[in-house]
Image (cartoon, rainbow, N blue to C red; front, side):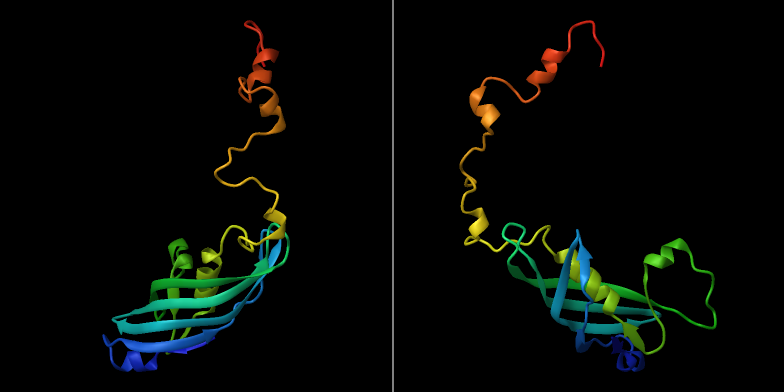
Length: 175
C-alpha cells in the first residue's frame, strides 16, 4: 500500500502526522506460517532535500502456534522505527550500486511501505511462540530454579560430559 507524501513535498521541513494501514502476507518462518492482522503504522513524515524521513510505531497482531502444545497463539507486535528514504530521480537515474539495494527508495509523491512493515514485524517476532504459564505441555517440565540433570548425570555425578571420550584416547593415539 502507498503512503501519499505530496503534502510534505509542498512544505519541506514540516513534520506531517500520518496513520497508514497495511497488509503483510503470510510468512513462512522456520517451517511455520505466521499471519498478521491489524497492521498500522502511525507517526510523522517530513521531506528535506532529496530525503524523506518517516518515524513512528508499527503495531500488529501476529498469529502462530505454541511450540509446546501447538495451540494458536496471538503475539502483539509493537515496533518503533525511524527510517530515511532516498528519492529516485528518473531523469538522472544511474546504474544501481550494491549499497543501493539495501537503501529505502521512493519516487514521485507516493511511498511503498509494505516491505518496511513486513521487515519490522518479522524482526520483532520471538524465536518461538509459547502459550505462557498455563500451557498443558509445559506442566511436567522442571522449573527454572530446579537444576536440570539428565539420567546419566544422576548416575555419575562426579564425571563431566566428555569423560567417555577421554577414556577412548590414550597418550600415544591420535583421533
